Image (cartoon, rainbow, N blue to C red; front, side, top):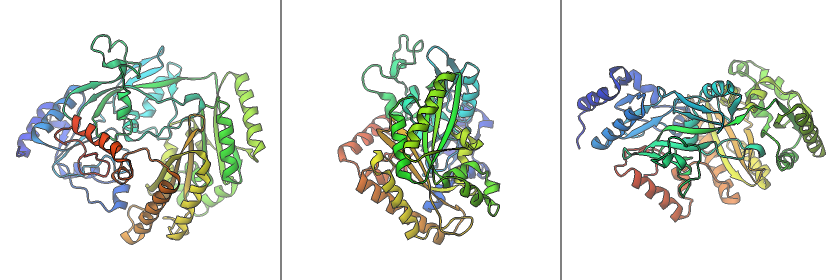
Length: 488
């Protein structure tokens, strides 16, 4: 059906009101760029409209309208986006900005869950949960991002032995065809609203289909999120190591004792960025002064329990770290806030220029030191430079365990200036491609998101399953077409 922009605008106004829609260029520009798209050299077209619904009914009406007129839709929750995943890649689309859907609908003390909308932030949820002696299960993200957006974007959430569970319980979703779907025990039309708290109900784990889907399969408008109890005593401790191998072995040994609340390995490059605000990184000598004090690798442990339990756990962790050459180091304030969960310090990882190329792989702990060396060698080979100083760059490293370190999530960051010219950015891209090729082919390192390059590496039946599911729920192909993460 041929689109009439004026008619479509009036229809959208009738749904959300004049003040919650714009087609003005100054309002559209912030939605078409981020640091990742700059590095990729992608020119993102302006959408026709940015629309800000407030209710589930409004979202459903917009999706039905988009189907009638075959309008591409690009939903986003908070928009703290640095991976090119929420950009409008096709002309004539609608960016669906969900920030106004920012209500915490329930915090249930018995089920330790929160029912939230996509505009709720981690900071907002943590503040309200704390009032009932509950807290978020920690994630490696800043306070201003959205739990819903995080769950749609990737499967990345720090797991430790105590919380090796998925945070998403059940979902209410507007499918791309305009139908409303509820998952898990919420799916029942008889009693589902009374008990939306059990994920593994009525056959296959449909909630899991939306984890890591980047919005291809629909728009999550409500989510039941798992919380955790706040322990009487919670403490963060850090151990330093001169080499990565022994640090990883300590992580593995401690995780297998099954009492940690959080557990991560960082290198000193990442730690320095977490501890220093962007303006301090720019000051000559500030980062170098901190790096001189930090051990090359750090193992951060979060403990929780009664006073007696925490004292015992701390003694045990010190012994296990000590067996492998680890030693206690002071907990910097910003590192402590990171260990506890969401934190503004996480954004410092990419400071001060907010450009980063992420090399991500999930694999057994066996080969982590080797893939760290692969990235180190590639950065040197392509002469990737520090965007601030111009000196040879050292990459950032973080290792997060899944389920008692049976697998670990490894993220390695190469920083760059998104405003740099193509000649400066091209070596970063070449380095990124070579690193992925090697860690995937040699070690089977798997990613957590289905981008088009990685999809080509899957067995055909797996890719077909994802693509056919997308076609089933999105017969008109309106959801996220044209981008690197589209399953069209």
